[in-house]
Image 1 (tube, rainbow, N blue to C red):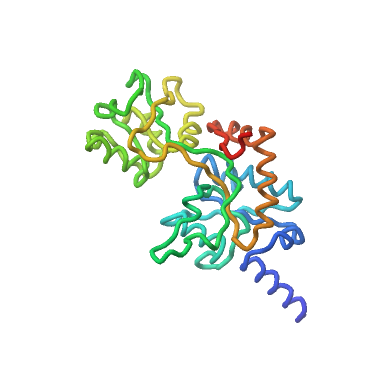
Image 2 (cartoon, rainbow, N blue to C red):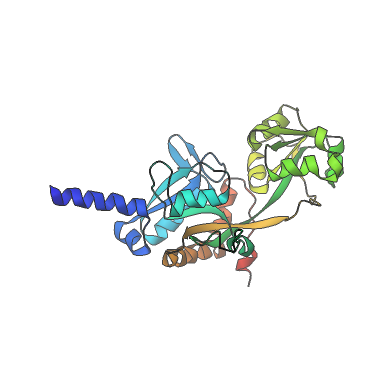
Amino acid sequence: MLLIALLVVSAISSLAQGRTYDDIIETKQLIVSVYRDFAPFSFEKDGKAHGIDVDIAKQIAKSLNVELTVRFTTADESVEDDLRNTLWKGDFQTKTKSDLMMRVPYDRDYSQMRDDIGELVHDRVHMFAPYHTESWQIAFNKNKIEEVSTMAVFQYHDIGVEVDTVPAFYLTGAFRGTMTKHTHHYPNIRLARDAMLAEEVDAIMGLRSEVSHLLVEQPANFELATNAFPLIGRQQWDIGMAVKSDYRQLSYAIGDVVTEMVKNGQMARIFEQYGSIYQQPTYYNP
């Protein structure tokens, strides 16, 4: 009995402390953190995990010949907080850690960011395997707006955004605040889309992957705009994954799987299943 108890404690401790590549292969279990209620990337339906990130994680687990355990995490105040909570320090209450976190910025400047005393902010994690390029996107009701060639139209037309996001700050702060009174804030971009359906706003602005997903099975008069976003800063950026910095071997194995998925078209097909626009990161260009 004592031996069994010790084995159980050892197994629990292993899950709580994070695991090496060899541990994962030996236990045949990969624990992956995804964001809660974040369609089309990760969400629950009928008690099961669904979404682009979940499908990618399933393929990674299949390629490694292990079982997948999806762990939903609620977004904290920053990505740094999310990385801490999921990978190197653990959940606040249970202290459990995941082996892999999805949807992490893949950017050298971000990964090499330093604090006030010159120490690396992200020295405890390793960010790798960019799997898609994200950007901002406007969708509009063509019955209300003929076209969106520039942002100037939103000096006269109402647009919905998710509160406390880059689009929200952009539309209320850029161009001397001339779009502020026409900018409407919602708890999430789906509710902004619903407001466009109800003709409370004439357009919405959010992540391209989310906005394109939300237009699936919507009225034919809802269209994606093709305009750029002056003064917004970075127009597009890569999204990748992260593991604890000590576990580079795991990142190499997963990186090989992701590369194959991108090159054989499987990554694009997963995005297509959710009606979400996919852009291949330049990392994989010849």
